[in-house]
Amino acid sequence: MTDTVISFRHFGFQYYSQAEPTLYDINLDIHQGEKILIAGPSGSGKSTLGNCINGLIPFAYRGTMTGELNVAGIDTRQSSLFELSKKVGTVMQDADGQFIGLNVGEDIAFVLENDRVPQKEMKERVHKIAAVVDMEKLLESNPHELSGGQKQRVSLAGVMVDDADILLFDEPLANLDPSTGRVAIELIDEIHRQGKTVIIIEHRLEDVLHCPVDRIVVFNDRHIIMDGTVDHVLASDVLHSHGIREPLYLTACKYAGVKISEEMKPADLNQMDLTVCTPKLKQWYDANVTRVIEEPSKPLLEINDIIFSYDGVRPILNHISAEIHEGEMLSLVGKNGAGKSTLAQVMTGFIKPDSGTILMNGEDLSKYSIAERAQYIGIVLQNPNQMISKTMIYDEVAFGLRIRKIDEEEIERRVLNVLKVCGLSEFRKWPISALSYGQKKRVTIASILVLNPKILILDEPTAGQDYYHYSEIMEFLRGLNEQGQTILLITHDMHLMLEYTERAIVLVDSEKIADQKAYEVLCSPELSKRANLKETSLFELAQKTGADDPLKFVECFIRYDRRMRQNEI
Image (cartoon, rainbow, N blue to C red; front, side, top):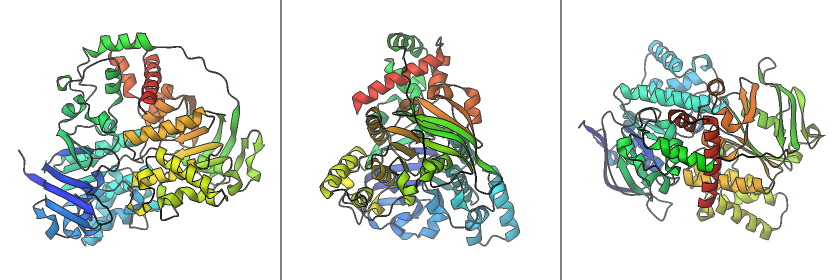
């Protein structure tokens, strides 16, 4: 066995502000050159474990440590944040919180400046790494003005430019479209093959497994639940039972009554033994396929020939037209920087288009102020830190109702109900500063849901959420939708798109290239490639097992899965 570079022995940590430890009796060895995936529900302690490795605990986040932790031969209690930063490079899930430079180039070069690298060498290394992550044309750009995916690329470059032996990625896929996420995983794998030790903390397990991983460490309830090979973990029921989404192709096999074993090599669909799966999947499909008759609905919102440009030269939205029907839940998808969030800002009035109109029930919304539009369209932004204005969770969710002079008793009823649905009831008296990024996201969703707008727009509503809270939030949104609430989801989560939305509008390079059923989009190689999406593994499974109509197989799975999910929640 290779040398151990990280060793936890009966390790525990408790924040000073918390009554209970966040980590308890952790025993874990990570060896030189390994690639480890750490998975677990929100709040299970994954990010806290990562912060112990990179030195943010105990040097930035204070608390009580017990047991032992050794990183690259260093006792972390006797070290410093600077010393550990030379051993461990970190890409945080909140990219905005990691930026230092005024432009992309300065940010990538920051660690080199600290090390007093000669300027000529510094520029060469920055340009080389920027080219690797496809950011060489944006070196002069302000990092805070980039799209979510571009920000993540800059953060990745900032780590790659240094020569730390251990690299820690805290939810590196949180803001990336599927194709860009696949590239990020390939970049991380390339770094790993250079002899680096790589630790990935991530909810999007199927996307991480695009490249090989040595082990999965499953966290819950403050300690390690399972530590094993990918095949061993996927063959167990530990992921589903602890709020972690398993690959969709495995879910489909389990619905068909297939018992997944390590010998089947379930870690990779291309290598998996599907001998047992094929006949059972056919039987399951024949028993569950149905013909769905759709009822037409009238347009609630009409987007007519919208054109918008920030600089008057390069269009961000180029002749965009679409309809949102009353009572539907649909997806707005496409590659990073395609114009999805910009279109949402035009709809809410945050941005005035250069030309075109937005009509609600035939009425032009341009005559209304942003505040007046809020009674028609509510939006939850991608970055929760851009929305939060209060110190305490309860006050943040109640804020919109209070400025509308709602009775305090009614406010309490509505706030407590939404907090429960969003999995935040136990935190209602907490300060927002004590929450994880994913928990902050749920607070901002709750603060808009409590207002009940006619159209609810959510920009990446499930980013950073574990399977349990993802399901809880989305089932709540489905419940609202079934009661007549119209919902538009801007998302990179192809699972969400498949499972919860009937229709998808696809934007690419400022233009609309598709408006059709969600599963049809993800079963089209051409559309997926153009929009930086990813064909669903369900479609690949159907093809590999000889389904007569792979498209119909995917539709059958979606409808069956929805029924199963509703029974679970």
